Length: 192
View 1 (cartoon, rainbow, N blue to C red):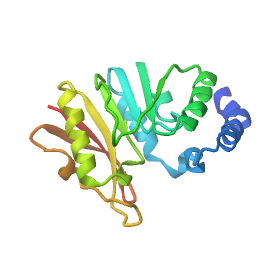
View 2 (cartoon, rainbow, N blue to C red; view 1 turned 135 degrees about the vertical axis):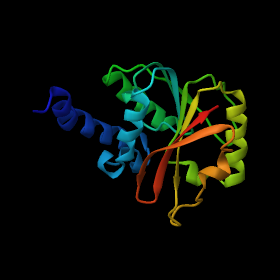
View 3 (cartoon, one colour; view 1 turned 180 degrees about the horizontal axis):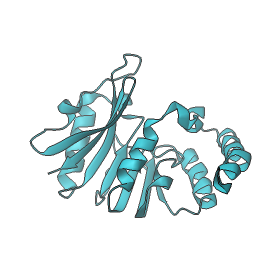
View 4 (cartoon, helix red, strand yellow; view 1 turned 45 degrees about the vertical axis):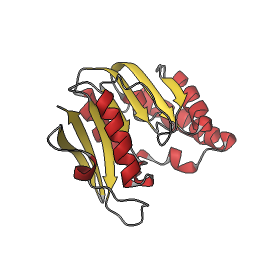
C-alpha cells in the first residue's frame, strides 16, 4: 500500500515542480524522472547508512538527493540561482531545511567542513586537470573519514570521461563503488 506522501507527490508536487522549472526558466533535465537516474537512490541508501552531521551537495539542482539524506545540516550549492529558488520552494514544501548558496566549482572557494560532499551528474563537464586540482584543494581541507560521493561516465557522448584513479590517489583514499548503471559509476571516496 502506498502512503500519502506518494499520492501527494503524484497529485501535487510533481506538477508543481514542473511548473516552477518552466516559470523560472530552469533546464528541464533538473526534473528528469528518478527512474532515469536509479543510482540516486543508491547514493541516499549509502549515506543514510552512515552517521553524518553535515552534508553538502555541489551542483545540488532542486535538492532531490539532499532532501532525502538523514543528517543534521544540509548545504546545497549550485551555479544557477534560478534552480536554487526552485529548490528553496520544494525544500519548504517537504519541510526540509537546506542552506542554499550560489557556487561556481571552477572558480569559487568554500569551507569544506563536511562529513560528505556530493558531486553528481556534472563532473563530466569539467576538464580532468581542473577537476583534479579542485578535488586536491578540497581534500586538503577535509578531515580524515570525510567522503566525496562522485560519479564518472565512460560514454563518449559526454564531454569528459574521467578515471577515478586519475582523480584520487589510492594511498590517501579508500575508493568504493556505490553503484554502476550503464556507463555511469558512482563512488564513495573516503579520506584516510
